[in-house]
Each structure stands twice: as structure tokens, then as C-alpha cells.
Image (cartoon, rainbow, N blue to C red; front, side):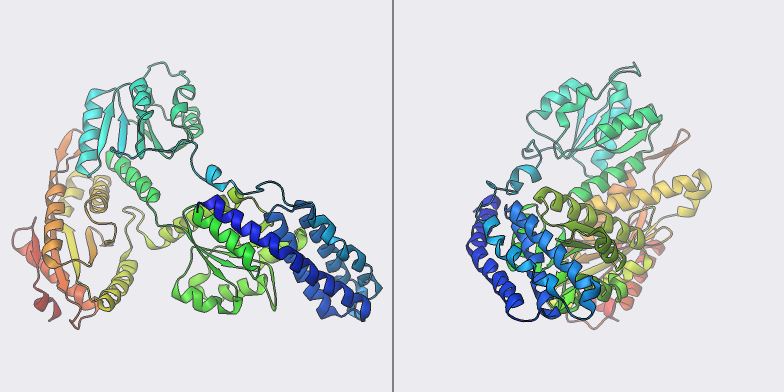
Length: 554
């Protein structure tokens, strides 16, 4: 069953249950007439109307949704009136006939397939075929093209060179790369050339575009932005920064699926949103009991929370305030998804800890876009707090915390783990001879090459200065040695140039392995890796030294 079929099945099930929902509202309405209006009973009625306003619109019953929302607003006015201070009065009785008429608005039926075609809207208009090349480079200058190709291949990218835009566009019709690296200024020396019309072929595809140009003015950058540029580099190129940006774009394309926690007492509506988000490639979990939210967050913290504003026995505002009491979740995005239309109440809810307010019913595309943008922004902020600005690797404290977590996980899974410490050889000489800016480029190149040559499951950190730490999970000592020695050789092959001078650098590495039965903590493991690094330095540098597991434990 595909996504649209699943959503249609949920809609059909909702329509079967709708008469029972309306009957329940009618029962509450008759109670208003038979007994003196009770504030608690009116609140219960308001909650049912709130749920109906959100679910009916989502499942295609627009008129019913609007009518339920209107009645809910009237009820809110009654509850907030001065008369309500001494107990609801005759105003509540006047709602009875309006409530009974709700079933008439349901008889019109849902709009045909209302809000269902997510599949077409959530995927690119052009479906990319299986990619054989990761990066396509358009560069008309032969020397620069050859240099860029050599650097891309050094960092483990598979690249393909084109010298004419027309050739690239023709190949693009058959298959598409992950990255388009385009130097359009080499296509035509006329600076007024309009490339927008020539580049329509890659619009609405999943390929990411990075531009290279000899022009750095605002107009050129604006034109690139209109073509969906992920980045813009001006000649002469800072190649390490270009490679680092390409790696970041690729990493974002392969980022883990967004994790969403849906807190809503309307079970069918929550299931609908869950399927919409799963269909868009996310992970979505439903929590129907808000009082369990802290235990759920502790076991598996999501990237974003979608929360109803009105739930039985608890308000979304208060629940958000409770979550914000915990320091670790102060920055966790919380988005209200509610049928509340009152702007004043929306603003009040936002002041109590939420990041956005979406009004039900909401289109599938709108929901998916908001969730993805919130998660992307949140992950960027987390990276800024935990990662080094030069290398985008974990900072000193963060890599030590990561080692503690990975060590505990390895023990639970009974897996081997290796920790490596590495240091750039004679780095002070690089700074003294070529300047600190070039020293930064060398450091950044280490980080980029590490990401390219190691597994995605390995954890990387900048321990300080020119020193790095690598945590290799579920990895034996022999495998770790082989991978890191290959990295060492690749690094010494990199060429750096400044003011016509070309040089290379080397790196020394120490590895400390651990078996799951060994009694050793994270700090002891780092000390063992540091000792192995010291041995590599003392034995001549530019080498990898592997501690025996027994030695690391002592």
C-alpha cells in the first residue's frame, strides 16, 4: 500500500467514525438543555469542537471544520465572559440548536481526495536515476579543471569533468549527480550573459549546485541564488574551503531522517500526520498521553515536537513549559498544531516556549516543509554549539562526551572499539614558514580528508590545536590500523600552495583498541591513545602505532 492509499484508508476510517463523534457532541448539547450549564461540561464540549475543527478539515470536510471552529470560538467567548465568572448562563443554551446542526454540514461529504496527493508534491518534479558520478564539474580552463579534479579525487570524490555547459546539460538528461560544481564565467567572457535561461535543466531536481566565478559582485551572486546555489566561490579559489563546503553539502544530503514526536489526543488525526511525515522520509512517533513526555524524551529525544494546544487535562502551553524546565531540551523545537484561530491565544501560547504555530487544517506540503526547516535549523544551531568552526568536527568536550557514550554502547553490544589520536607533524614550522592562514587550511584539510576516508559511523573530533581524535565503533585493531594508515598516506600526498610555493605535510597517529571485557574508562583510553601517538612521534613521525589491547588497559 503506497502513501496515498494509506492516507485514503485513514480518511475512510475517520468518515466511518464521524457519526459517533457528532453523536457525542449532540449528547453534550442535550445536557446543556436538561441541566444548568456547568463550566467543566462546557470545557469538555469545547475540547470536542476543537478536535472536530482540526480533524474534519484535514479529512476534507472543510465546511464542517469551519462551523466547528466558529462554535468553539463562541463557546470560548461564553467561558471568558463576565457571566461565566459566576457560572455559565443562558448564552450556553443558545448553542444547542447550532450544535445539533453540525451533522447537516457533515452530509456534504469530503472534497475528492482532499489534501491527499503528497506523493507528487513531496518529491522532486524530476526523479533522479541511480548516480554513477557524485560530482560533475563544469570548468573551461584546462589547468584549473585538472587541479580541481585531482583535489576531488584525493578526497575520495568520484568526479566527471565537462568543458561546455551544453555537454553537461545533455548528459544531465540521462542521469544526474549529487553535486553540480559550475564555473559559468568560463563559458562566455561576456559578463552580461544571462545564464538563468541556460540552467533551467537542473531546476526542481535533487542535485545541489555550487558556483565558481571570476565575478564576486552582488548581481552575480543574486543570479546564482536564483538558480538555487548552495554556495558561491570567487576566483582565485581557496580549494580546501571549496572541498570542505562540498563535503558539508554531501553530508547534509545524507543526514539522518528527521525524528518527530507527535503529541495529540486525536488518535486518527495523529496517525494521519504520522503517515504524512513517514511518507516524506521522516521518523514519526505518536504520544497520546502527554504526562509521559519526559520519559519518552529521555529514551529517544526527537528533533522536533508537534503538539496540540488543547488536550484533556493538560494544555499545550503548560506541557511546553515543563519541557523547557529541563536544560537539555531548552532548544528542542516545539511546534503547536492546533485548530485555535484566535491570534491573541496563539501569541500567548508562543510566549510559553513554542517556536511556531500551525493552524489545522494544514496541507501536507506545508506540514512537511515546516518540520524539515525547523529540524534543519535546529541541527545547524546544535552544530554551532558542539562543533569546531574551522573543521566542523566535535570540540574537545563534545568528543570526550561522545567517547563515553560510544564506550558504554560498545560494552552493551559486546563490540570492539578503537580510539586514535593524531597530530600534524612539525605544524609550528608550517605556521612559521607559510603563515597561520595556511596553517588553518592544513588543519581543515585533515578534517575533510577524515570525513572522506573514514566510515560515517566513526566519530571525529578536534582535540585541540593540530591534534585530532577518532572513535571507531565496532572496529577491530587490525581494521583500524589499515584504515588510518591509508588516511596517513593520502594526507601526505595532498599539495598545498601559497605564493607560488608548494608543500605537503605529514601526520602521526596512535591507536588504542579495547575489547568489551576490559575494565577501562574513556579517560584511560584517551591516555593510551596519546601514549601510542607519542611513540609514533619518537620513532620518526609520519607513521601509525597500534597499542596492544592489553597494554591499553594497563
